[in-house]
Length: 314
Length: 261
Ligand SMILES: Nc1ncnc2c1ncn2[C@@H]1O[C@H](COP(=O)(O)OP(=O)(O)O)[C@@H](O)[C@H]1O
Ligand SMILES: [Mg+2]
Picture 1 (tube, chains in turn yellow, cyan):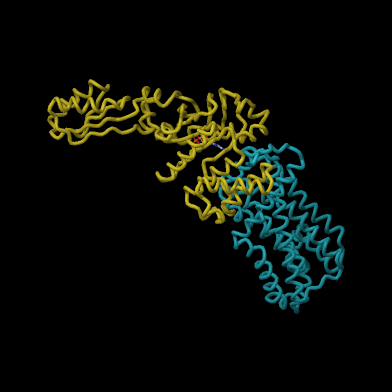
Picture 2: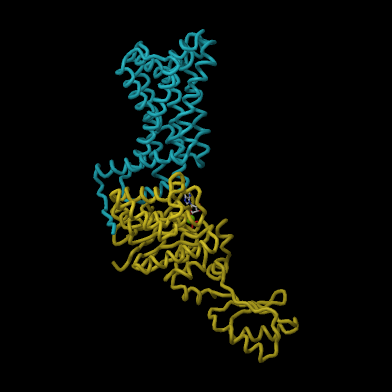
């Protein structure tokens, strides 16, 4: 199969809410599709439809070439799901959680025990294997959750906001796991609210908002479209801001000035040395110079003209 | 290497999955001492409390009262325990574990069936503890083994039917904690406004009218018949009919609610 997921014009309404309003998604086999959007955009609804938990009101979707409605049972044998909230049985131990899934997938007692031990080891959970999951930290629970969705070696993996609420270290661990899975050939659909997460992991990104795909492409294409990074320069002498504005407008469009700092969106990180050189040539002493990744908010601002926060509340 | 065999949707596979999920419901007890307490110490405490605290006042003699009240307390405690099914379901729904199960290639009915099975085992255990405690302090079943087994069987069927109300409450409650609150609001008056603990003829007339139609009254009398002698058949029928009505109303509502989420 060349496409792990093909979803066309998916529609789902909850009463008055149009959770999905004609969403197309494509995941190529062996790659990662990042579905990026703010709270309430429709990410979870899309994942639930693709994982056969919810029936769409319109449109169609195929996972591994199988229709998610007509061949739901076969699709379930193909996919693994890690929901938005680490969904393990907190009253069971880590090992019991994994063995339960193994047994439900039709493994023998010995096979499920072996598979559980294997996954607990590779996710650094051996020491906690026989402790109730309710005693786990957020990061451990996430890893157990991931392990539970991998018991059956799924070809297609759904990760719904896998790092929301995790500290940076735990987030990095999850990222590592995802990279390994992909290198082993698993196709991954990952939803996230974080631009850098999509940037780190995804081969392609679909940005969704209000149940619609508003942009799609590789991370680089999106960055070019939106201006992925913000360059900020503050001269020592406030009187130098005009020179700074002049230099920056040579490399980036529409620099803005506030509080003695000049900011501009840049798409190519390579501009940084050029800016430094030219400011030096112009004899400007610099107090602060920074290049930082755009937030999701800024991507939204660039794509939609309004902020993600307002979108979510609307 | 372990290999994954995709389970077919055969009834046999569904049954195996049901047993696995029932195992899960029972293993949970190991890590949740509270639940063990609910299942064991609470029955013991209630039997002792009612027998020695109220027995003298109500029947003039604790053991005479025990002989009347034990069948009633079995029904009452079984009813209360059905709320645990709703609570467990609500936890699964709100924590996303239910989604995890539904995303697996297993029979659609297995998760609920597994829960019903493990809850029935828990019900049987509680009832055993109630009977054993009663026996230790003087209760005697006069109708032999058949009566005792009949009482167990009837209670398992009755609590299975009534637990659909709990499952419904579990499917609509937005937080697991609210399941107990909603459930007790209905089950508490239902189980006490019956002849489980006091004879109907000691009650004021207007209350008698309700007590006489309450299925809990019929169930209590049916168990009395099976354990200590008396009419069985009509009481069993009325008790089960009441429970069946509850199941017929709430099972479709609960299933629709769970599916439509
Ligand atoms: N079961 C439901 N009932 C009613 N509304 C829902 C339900 N699930 C989601 N919604 C609504 O649909 C929209 C999309 O939700 P969701 O898919 O959860 O977004 P995301 O995962 O991107 O945060 C939101 O407005 C949400 O309130
Ligand atoms: Mg979501």
